[in-house]
Image 1 (cartoon, rainbow, N blue to C red):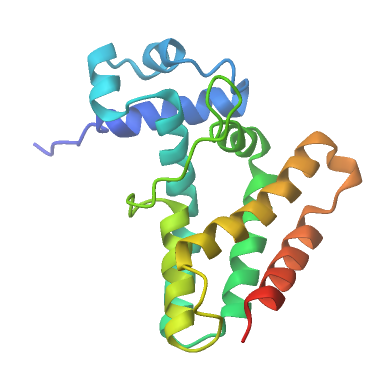
Image 2: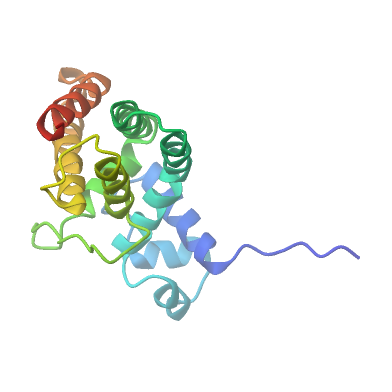
Length: 195
């Protein structure tokens, strides 16, 4: 008899959150709704995730994995930072255009319930910020960009430029070209950090 593996509770929670976000909205994706849709117990939810936003961030990391792997591969092949950043920016634009409700949820989740931006956790090695910091540190060591700005700060600056384009696009999709914004953000950012 062949046993089939049951999805882990973490995956069930993430899949339920993704389903709710894609069908409804950030506001509809409450912890209670995710628990109901996933079929897991409340304790199981909180064992795996401390909050709704933590699930959304895990979804974003899962979606970003192919882009992260490609960027790491290209960097190991000594592809220029310019090409890697352009790929990353375009990947973010493409993903948000393909999954706008989930993208909007990711942007909403960076603010607390008072609307204040949550500070980055520089010690979280799984975060996208940490990944970008790794990219910038490697580029600094290769002598491609300035070394006088910490890599984590460069990461936050680059993400900030991309977020601005996303905010405009989400507010008025017809008035903004997200792909063009991504290309221009990568180009302008590189102008500011090159040697």
